[in-house]
Length: 240
Image (cartoon, rainbow, N blue to C red):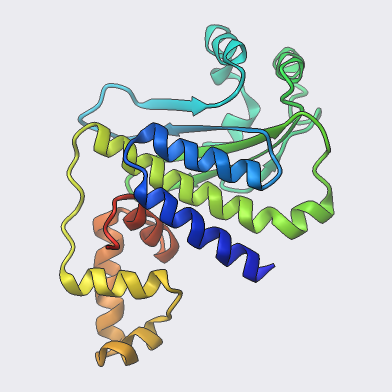
């Protein structure tokens, strides 16, 4: 399992770093979703962008008729997956019980072959929250499938958030943060999975110095942790 997750991460990280715009980033995410056994996906993000009037963005490859219906009916305001996502990062599996208070939404979604789904939100230090939803028309999510593959789903949810958020910032003209040569060097080793202790040995510096630069990188990239910082840097093309 660990080997497959690493391969998926390396492959997707490279593709995300090479994607030039929002749609290209989403195409990478959508293709990865298919590789993980789903047919379609959606990504919604609520961003705190002082330079943008649009606070919420939704992009998906669901049937266009369903996208139109969802928007026209105002289902965003009552969608229980969204209500869960804005307050928790716990993964969520779609179910009849989850949609008990919104049976019409559940029935209409299923009519468009959105019958089996999984979702998870991601939060970052900038105050943005985004949620990736994976969907397919059949084959219920079993405990065995979740045990084997949910770490991959979660990795993708986080990677999608940082990459799509970065693409949105680029679209609105926000320049990428300036990182020093040392910060980039440490980021590159972090991307290779090295610990602070290993990086310190490789660069002949103290662990405290590594952690100091790593903290600055997280602050500049507005990332909550090391994994998010690496994914964000990849999305911004900062890893070289």
